[in-house]
Image 1: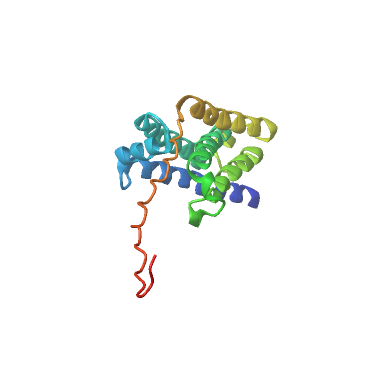
Image 2 (image 1 turned 60 degrees about the vertical axis):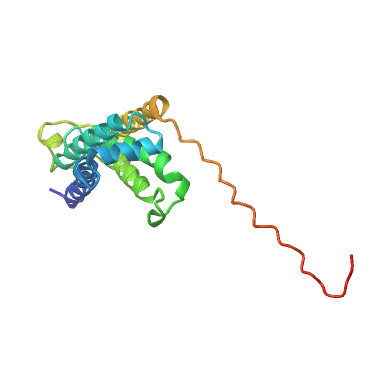
Length: 186
């Protein structure tokens, strides 16, 4: 076993574990499914409840595939798709930095997933144990086509951006009366 296999295992564990925690939070976190559905509805992803469950299933499933190293490019696609949707729908308008709710986090997850699809899961994986060699060009194309294709299909069929509400004009300040000047006539 080479250090590169240990490195790929670490990448898979962190990427997959992050997706699992992200999906778990959508399911069982603060707002649970109902809160996640309201959030998706607010972003224009309708119906929100269907998208909430789809995100949970995708992120838990993809995360699990990545952690165990099984069908790794499909696990990578399950990371790329939701992150592409999130980047476009929720984070793009906020700029790059994550501390401003920008797309930094979703970009990092997506690029790491593409790189993992290119490199493969390493020898410490179920893919290796089962003799599945699915990396390189085939892995990248599978991850990108399935991930971005799924994201594009979801956006085309379900995303209805909420129109920006026009700003309500503030009431005009009360008109001021001209000051009376003593000794002057009009």
